Image 1 (cartoon, rainbow, N blue to C red):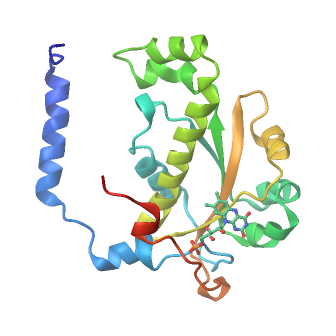
Image 2: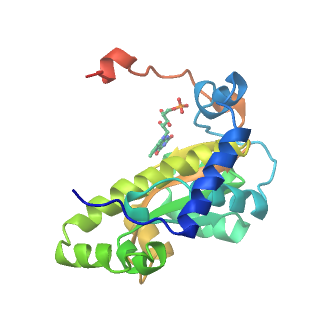
Length: 221
Ligand SMILES: Cc1cc2nc3c(=O)[nH]c(=O)nc-3n(C[C@H](O)[C@H](O)[C@H](O)COP(=O)(O)O)c2cc1C
């Protein structure tokens, strides 16, 4: 059997951070659960309230804390907010999604970096070359890792938006090759979907669609 790895002072400090935070935290109450999950919706129109740089940074700083495989963090984001940036984006959003996207205070373009493994020395300094070597030896794994972990981070991103009191309008109806060329040229980032952010206009919501019940989707073994 392998011996458990030695824990250094930084490991012990990290354990203390969790212990201390747990003394202050509670499960989310019903109001917070409504905001994050039960009552919230995907929005199709937006109130005029602007979204600040500080809010965008807060959203990113929450999202980045959530887990990915080996901490590979492949999500990259362009926030489109200025009139000039919206004008540039308009033609690469599909017609049916265009008006509501351009009306949003901000739209995040979410891309997954298929070169994520080049950054592993920064992200896993204790084992700087492990994942890089693995991806270079098994290139078929790269899209799988980028899409799985990018998708996870995109999901965390939407929940972070809700956690700071804003709303989301996710859309994959965009010209993805066109977006790749416009926003990620010279990189291996591939557009996944876009997500408008702001204070959603309730009058733009339709009836809520059914979800699978627990017994239809889950099995306790
Ligand atoms: C990745 C993704 C892509 C989506 N693409 C579109 C889209 O192109 N156009 C659109 O109007 N809605 C789009 N939606 C919105 C979904 O239809 C919506 O989130 C789903 O029906 C649940 O709606 P609700 O959150 O209001 O219950 C997308 C959602 C996600 C997460």
